[in-house]
Image: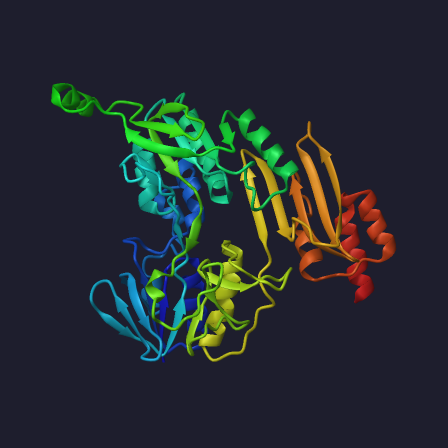
Length: 437
């Protein structure tokens, strides 16, 4: 049996190792399009801060791990997939046959159609190569503009701010939405994160966007040559939606990601309304023997029963285990993904679970201490907690995931207690879980 896995990130690695445990003799090939050993993108912020070396991003540190596991790594990019013919055409011209295929190609950065986005001093923060480009431009006193304050933007924001702050530089973050992390936090939680970030020295600008970027270089002549040799600061000129113009050393684009699925045109694999690969509860696509897992996948939301693209690493790992087990001949099934976000911003921990935005016909309780940067909000639907948002607390916060994901039904007494004090969620989970058992 030959298993081909497209994507050498955490999803592909977990799935490959799951298959290997079940079938020691099967052939396994992982295809990745970066000239790197398999690594975790989630470790890149720590690299930018100087907390780890590049080796600290690797998923498996033993250089001989893949040889010992008899898993072949192939550097190439998938160009097309022939589902019925069971082949994958690669960018190096080769055609790879498979018995079972896993699509784990993850996400790709979305770069808005703004003039100047192709300039060398406008970089993404998605790959190790991007991280190297950022570190190369992190000159003493650098003035940096970051486009985007969503989940990815806020993850890298601390790393960038910490790096430039050490040398007297500055970071400005611009977000076109009305608040930071609008897709994972309530307005109050977002407000606290913004105030906390501004206390840390970050300039945050919301409800506006970049409309143009141009190079700040003289037009030709001897002056231009001298300018380039001096490698000056403020290399880009940025125009904003309100008409204001400012200069920065470089720009980081963190305006979101989308499933990487361009190679699937004509494959027969169904793409959902949200742009991800549609799978069932076995992570099987609409093409026999072709599976999908991770950020490129559109799967069922545990909380709502609707399809979603849940681009978080814990969800990707869970899906990889299910896909790997089934590719190895098992019958593993998923109950659906749970929306789960954990964000650390200059030491302030924020989390959201499930339907943190609430549900029609539901009710909620909210408790906030703005001076202490402490906040909790629980969303109810009948006698169940279906969503939660927490800022400034880590103690027992994982119990909220259990309370939501297990669907524990609250007694009237315990719901009343939570409405009076939502911080008692741990007690409620234990009491109602034991009662149900």
